[in-house]
Image 1: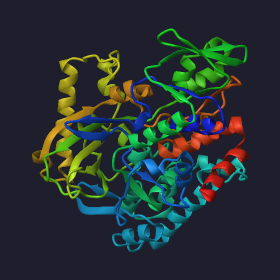
Image 2 (image 1 turned 180 degrees about the vertical axis):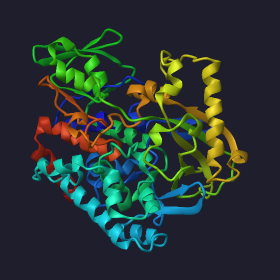
Image 3 (image 1 turned 30 degrees about the vertical axis):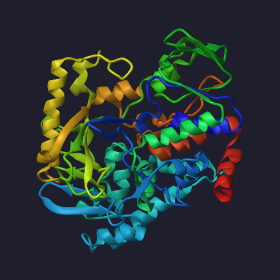
Image 4 (image 1 turned 180 degrees about the horizontal axis):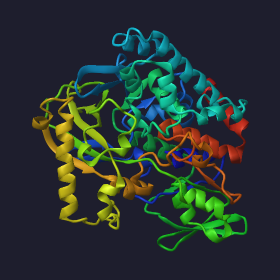
Amino acid sequence: MGGLATGLILAKEGYKVCILEKGAQIGGTLQTFKRDGAKFDTGVHYVGGLDEGQPLYPYFKYFGIFQDVQLKKMNADGYDLISFDGDSNFYPHAQGYDNFKQQLLKFFPDEEEGLDQYIAGIQVLCEKFSLYDLQANRPPQEELPFLYQGAKEFIDGCVKNEKLRQVLAGSNLLYAGSGDKTPFYIHALIINSFILSSYKFQNGGSEISRSLNYSLRDLGSHIERNAEVSSINHLDTAIESVTLADGRNIKGDIFISNIHPTQTIKLLDQSVIRKSYVSRLMNLSNTVSVFTLYLVLKPKSLRYFNHNHYHFHQPDVWHLPEYQPENWGKDFAVFTLPAKDDPAYSGIVTVMAYMNFEEIKQWENSFNSTLKAHDRGSGYEDFKEAKAQVLLSSAEKVLPGLRQKVQSYYTSTPLTQRDYLNSVDGAIYGVLHDYNAPLKSQVSTRTKFKNLFMTGQNIILHGILGTSISAVATCSNILGRDYLVNKIRNKVIKG
């Protein structure tokens, strides 16, 4: 998303844009795949803040995406449900701030003041992040104090009820939440967008990349697939060209990397870059990866439910990335989409759980993708099958009898994330942001070369909204921040 959005912004300003895609599909986690007649999302399961006047709306309007996607609004009284072992309640995250509060007060009637404080804190923070609501003249310095505040610390300071604290953070699989590291701004920017409005893409996240592709093509831009960059070549303080794996050399005036900063540094001649800069980017900590189970359901076997479900086997939702091996798969998220021929029923179910790269490290030297298919062997297949059975059994805690409703199933591991998305160790959200040392985990859009920039999920924030914001931040170096922000805002006003 980040590379496509960045390219489209520049193409709209008259730049001749060429996008080099390593794989067969464009769009990163917008990619979808089909199995047994069903289409699955690889990363984008729902999106927030899309109604007029909300954060993502101006970006979609400017990019021309709305006319190319089919959206379905999620359950207003609970777009996400949070549950725990030993507790029969399903705690809702509802759309609209008043509704969000009222739905939770049904379970926590003594926490109205705490919920008000929590909501106010989120809204104040979101007002301070200029590109979140496209305010060109707001000084970035207003954002700095929030970089040093922890999400868990903030939530615990607002509400006293321990269960409510966990419920408020219950969707933190959206950002690989860590109680010791996750900044409050990551939690706030993401949760705010979903509380404002939550939608699913009826035909998968690839609708977005397809829309961006059409717009880029109409503006004369070129997207080349199977075009892996093997080196970035400099002349003094500027980048002159990139060399592809097939030996071709592509020249240009401006170069923008949408891959992980560590991967970008590896493509450069590090001898001409300050050692401290190289060391910082090479040693960035990354978020955990995931194991995903994709289920094709038997026809009319499961009524469609218009919400997501996050379940935890223990009351602490903040330390899941550090799970014990014996507890793997007991904490998970469930997403579903309606069947094409009968939307009253679910056609597919996706179950996702954290997985550390160490679990599949014995196969780390293998590589498998659509363009470079390789068999990792029976041991790897046995590993996936065992994990699939664990996760399927866990999912039956929230979907009783699910196993009997499955027609077929498929899996992905951290290796899948790594090989298809070029992410370090399959990190689901890229760089791990740490409020204890926020500047060390921040990646600038600028590099040590005057015409090389970075964009994408490792800059500012991940997700559809995060990468859209990152694209504007990157292009602001080239076009000017005030000019670009006003251009997008005027597009929204004038249509």
